Image 1 (cartoon, rainbow, N blue to C red):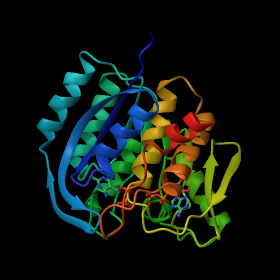
Image 2: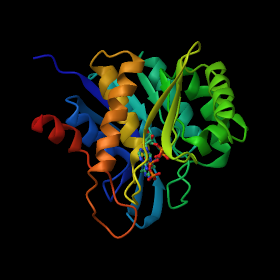
Image 3: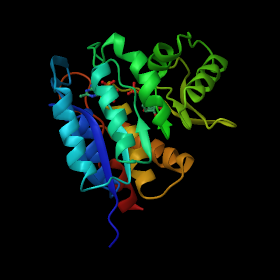
Length: 268
Ligand SMILES: Nc1ncnc2c1ncn2[C@@H]1O[C@H](COP(=O)(O)OP(=O)(O)O)[C@@H](O)[C@H]1O
Ligand SMILES: Cc1ncc(COP(=O)(O)OP(=O)(O)O)c(N)n1
């Protein structure tokens, strides 16, 4: 049996809907062996984020060394990185251990408004992390923060994607969850071609962790050898059914259903 290995470098969500918990659940569902490097602990539930506790740079580096020296991942994704210092350390270790298939989810703010990245870390993200990205997955506010543009139209999103490409990412996907359209439009750019993935927008409160889950699914598919566009298409299907078959747990923004994708396949 060939085992593919996927790594998440992210924060912990005690509520289990986002962060490393969402990533590991997604890796498992997509049949990739999951590994994790923790960058921060959050006290969090469906109502919001009650506490944020970053790890030290050396604690993050030591975990990356443990992985790099023994368990080379076939793909990795980054999530909450919190500070410029952690971003720089992560970018250095990705290069030192020659890690490929790198999905960068530039997590900045949780849905409830809590800051998961310090403002001054955005420059480090642009300088150190986006240049090593196989795929970068900003939502609309994150794309605005990175590019300095205001994204009111699809043409604005295309311009932002071009700027992210010029920062060094190989593939850009500007996610449409925060868009105004009736449908959800995720815009992909590979330096030559724009592709739009258009899906039904679900009217639900239960979208906690959508970005983490989506990026983790891309990483799992890249680990299995898919090209970037195919990996994004599978991840899009994974997140759509995870939102459609939501679990209704907690009294705020509930998590998505990480087993919906496999449950539906089993029924076919
Ligand atoms: N209400 C929704 N219905 C269907 N798909 C959604 C919905 N909200 C988000 N998505 C999808 O979930 C993924 C994450 O998008 P988004 O919510 O924009 O990111 P983030 O969680 O980082 O803010 C994207 O593929 C997006 O299209
Ligand atoms: C620990 C941790 N990491 C990331 C997030 C943000 O996750 P995201 O998928 O963008 O979902 P929302 O927070 O927007 O629901 C998080 N909340 N916690």
